[in-house]
Every structure is written in C-alpha cells, then in structure tokens.
Length: 253
Image 1 (cartoon, rainbow, N blue to C red):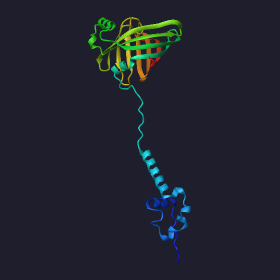
Image 2: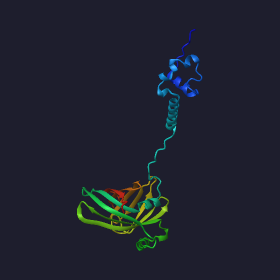
Image 3: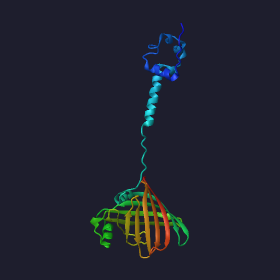
Image 4: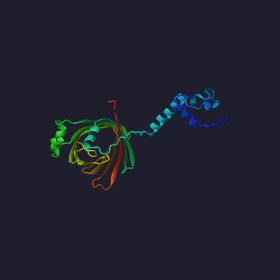
C-alpha cells in the first residue's frame, strides 16, 4: 500500500501546533508516527508552548509599534501675557551683557547680579513715581523693583550698582505705559511705551532728553531671559550702542 507524503512549511507547522490541543491529537495515523513529527526531531522553539509564546510576543510588539507615541512638547513663551511676563521675571538672575559702542568702536562685557522683587501698593517709591506722572496708583497693572550690582571689563575696580522701580499700566490688552524711577539710559525718571508681542517678547521704547532706547526682552526658557537693547540718538536716526544680555535664574538664593 502506497502512502502519500504531506510536506508542510515551518510556518504552517507552527500554526498547527498552536491550534491543535496536543501535538498529535488530530494528525493522521500515517503522519503522527513519522519522523517528521517525532519529538526528537523538533527543536524547542517548535514546541507548542514556544510557538504560543513567540506568537504572543510578536503580537504585543506589533501593538506597541502601532500605539501612538506622545512627544514631549517644547516650552514656549508664545501667547504669554504681560502679567505672566512680570511674574516670571521676579527672582535672582546672573547676567552677562556684551555691548558694542558703535560711536567709539569698542566692546564691553558686564557681569551683574540682578534681583527683582514685587512692590507693595503702599511703597513710597512706587507712590512717588505715580504722582510724578499723574498716574493713579490703584490702576497700576504690576510693579516691581529691580536692583543690580556688577563690574565691567573696562574697569574691574569700578562697581556698577543701582535700583529702579518699574510700574506697568495698560492702555490696551497688549500695550501700555511703563514708568521708571530711574531710566535705562539716563538716571532720571522716565516713561516708556511697551507692547507685548504674540511670540512672548516684551518690547519697550523710551525717549529721553538726549537719546532714545529700544529694548526687547523674552524668555527662552522659564529660567533664561534674553535682552536686546539699542541706544539711539534723540530722534532715532543713528545707533550709538547695541547690546545683548543673557540672564540665568540663580536658584541658589
């Protein structure tokens, strides 16, 4: 009596072993005893348990690959309000400012420690600056005191220090006036016009008796502020000084 030979591929064999209750229960008697299905000829990876484990692992891997991976969103200052900008500015900062004095073709580096604190509504300096420019104190949007101390590479023995109170008023949601007890370019009280751009940059224009200043300040990260300043002639036709400052939050204080 002649027997037909059934040749199965390895993948079909593993499928049969996984589906059938046992390795020989439903196999034809002519095949169940053949050397092809003999346990001694089957490797451990072809056993029923091994096949099931391999299939389960592959299925889990496929599910993991198909699952969407959520990427961490990068921090951005876009859409920041002026109130949040002032709140984030409060603290201690270590500043490095590089200035280019265009008029004298010279470079200067200034290292400073800056402290920014909130100002109380009954602070005398706050009330004085509001009175000087006839602004109502109760309508102030925010007020901070900024103190600094540093040194310049032009004269390492000279200590550069000072303090000013900044009072913020709104004309519209993203623009208004900024009062200073001490100006940036001249050490006199000054009033500037500010705008808060959609990308989170605080832009300030201030006109003094002999010059004009344009400042752009923004947060690169919650603990890193950038400041770009340009000092112009009185009517803004020429640039006298351009500077860039990096301010890193000092968390040790």
